Image (tube, rainbow, N blue to C red; front, side, top):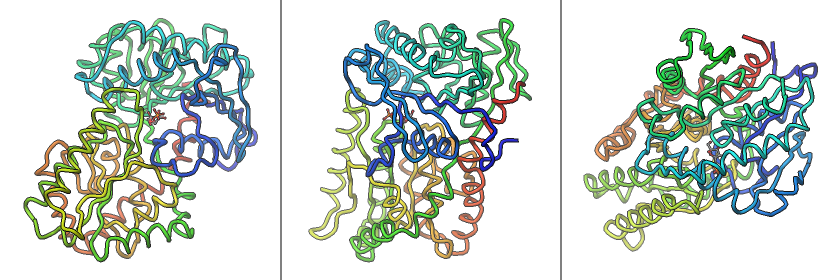
Length: 470
Ligand code: F6P
């Protein structure tokens, strides 16, 4: 079996994803999303290679230049992309078509032929440049919706290695998914992988439903085996986790302690509630602000006792729907603060920047309520980090959307419907009234899951299946 600590004899791992984490990036934890941190953790104990986009624009993307660096035991190989590639593949098809559709937002999904072609062209480019780096015994692990067709592109270049794919975001119900032009073409490419992983059973079920009902593939729901046109793919749920060892140690750092201190002294005995999200419409931030507004409407005196801190680093700013959500949020925060503030008391602090993981640890520990209320989310690691950062003797309460993948595992959170301001307001009241014994009971249940279903076990589970032919 694959033990994280005894991998020296195992094949080399090649990870390919759109985004490659900049080693030791500072101040960006909130902005990076879950993928970068998780993959860094997955690779750091293994001799491996991480291939992807540098995040930079330059015409050298066309010349095939690959920038290679080794840092912290992780070798990264990155390429630049041209402005046209970024517009069509990243801003266009990945983030204006697939992202909204996969998060059940048909109203925001744009279907443009040109961006679809750009998506295929960049996937082909990834295949062309990464294929020469792959040696016969390597195991290849491709990540997320930007690179769904990459496995099939590598196969067409004669790559016979075991290749796995993991989707970090939800998979939509068939009824929604079929609104995508060429949906069948996209799913067919997924069936060139040996293993396809999803965050939860719910997304897996939707995928298998599509394979069986639209593609007429042969599906074995108990084993996740999908047989189609002579090939076999193994589809399974692998809920991602945090790097528990590394994250929980942050509590002992000066940076985390100072951040906690800074937060607590600034609130002056007021109790802090916190939200930390990339500024994305899927995260339900305006809806959360509505819920908080509803709570203050019902409990006007509580602005003396409570402050909400929303950390929201901007994301994908070239996509129109992200510009719109930012404006909406600014307006809502401004309205509530205008209506409810006193000269020395402001109910909502809204911050558009990222913080390091150590600082976030401190902020989470200093906040008695964590609000994680996405309208739809593949997993959501902020929920798990909030739990991991709590003081076991006096833990805070996690308010969690039932539509986050994490809700399937964290049933002892206060679960809410994120679309309902009443539900959120009621959950805040429940959290404030909760006894210490009840807070501890819930925390103790959740922390076991967060600790045991960590990112090392996620990696080991996926790679175990990938390295053993089904
Ligand atoms: O976790 C989902 C995800 O889309 C990752 O694939 C991505 O790296 C992250 O969120 C942050 O988004 P972006 O790379 O577009 O900044």
